[in-house]
Length: 421
Image (tube, rainbow, N blue to C red; front, top):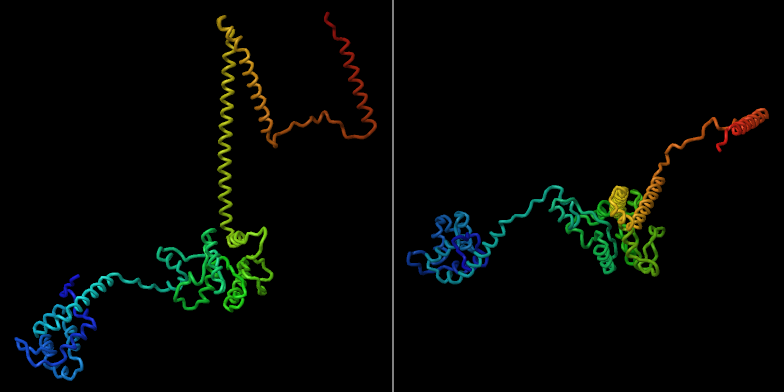
């Protein structure tokens, strides 16, 4: 690619190019050019119009050529590499032009690349933004205008157990769709106080703390500190904060001796991963799943009710058909004699229709009986028919006399009724 050097300013001249020009121009030349200019740094100074007062300073300067190029660039902002080549042509230094042609093209390409990159600028950091960003997820969510990332659990383990911690991380995130936070993977670089950032994540951003217990874990003072901190948080907030997982058989610390520990090495009717998933899962998610199941059951009940309504409607249609059939049969006496034979032939069919109608009517009465409300008013016996609650002998004798008289009167009345022959 050929670069137009007239568009490349002199400031793009690299240190390598300046050194090549200085090494060839600094030594004095006796023979001048055709236009009378010296063929060394003095001719370049005259072409740049630096002034006669600067010449004594350049004579004692260790690198006069570099000084001339720097001063020329400061006095004339729009000077380019093409102007420098014209100056070398004026003092007839064709050797320098040949030696620096490739260097000038390289300097021009680098300058144009830097100019293109400079078109995009970095974002200015707002005050207080870095205080909120603790993990890589926070950085991505902030660019999308979302809140900080929250996690289901923070995974705490010893560096020697990183292989098993990676297995647990993949299992919980890929299979059970849980969001975990790990220091080595998620913590953003440049955090001033690492322990303070982890404490903030455990207390404010993570619902649980999964602890992989092993002999190596108990040797780390930092892990013991985070364990004690999480235990204090659980007591203060009255939450089940710590989920201990025993990876290697060892003596448990005092903080975990009275907790139910998930033992990875346990065998039998014991699913370690399912128990761990259920222990990490928040009750809100369980409630959402229960609501989803309840909604599904309600939808099933609605479908069942729709089918029942359709069945009842079909029964009503059958009842109407039976009534229409009955009306048709009731007009058989008014029909001509030729229709009576048809009626006799259809006698069995009519009996079947009447039997079906009777069954439906019985079923309807049973349904009505079942639909009787509990609060329906029930008729009570009359007060006049109730016996008096007196226990005296006189009331009992009086009552027996009245019954005897009534019985006698009824017999006498029956004898007076004449008998028809």
